[in-house]
Image (tube, rainbow, N blue to C red; front, side, top):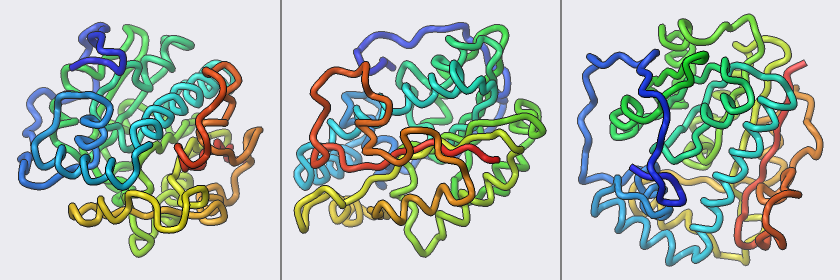
Length: 286
């Protein structure tokens, strides 16, 4: 497994928070999975023919999809760095982790604060297998992994690995990147996020990203390609995205195109809105 630039993932092989004896769920190689499609488009090798076929259809529908995915990773790096270095957060709950691609949330957070603790959550068993070997922690911190679905927030919040790793009486950063568009409106993603935020103490944060069709020409986008592969996909407007942040205090600069959020130090000029098509924001729980 390699990072985005092709280099090996490194770190102390620390399995704290991961049960080596836990039985892995079966991997269905006949059904594409969003994490493996993402992996393939970014040049990874942990994917199957069915994932590559679905990715080809998605990229044909949206030729800028790889750019958007790279910008999503860059957004994650900026937001986690801000949360750890500037906001002083020492606990992270990352839902929709995906296949490990360095730097991961814990690598960024622990670079700023070695004692930072991170719980990863994903529903792809291949991600679970790689998490055991690659999502490792600094000696001072802890990294844990939960095999679960965002749509089951109570299962996540009750999991012993979360309760053993994070102190729910102290601020936690809930990070949700590249996931919400796979939850259709009928599954009430706003209620799911609200349930998670309600369980976190005052001073916690939500860092969130959501693809939108607001900047695309009419009829453009890759939602139909994903749905044809059996994967739910839901673009949302700016107002619909803002609902995820209801009751939270927006961190400046507020809701932005994801490629623009605190991106002053990124290569310029930034990609056009029609190439990235996603909103991003951080909100603080008062």
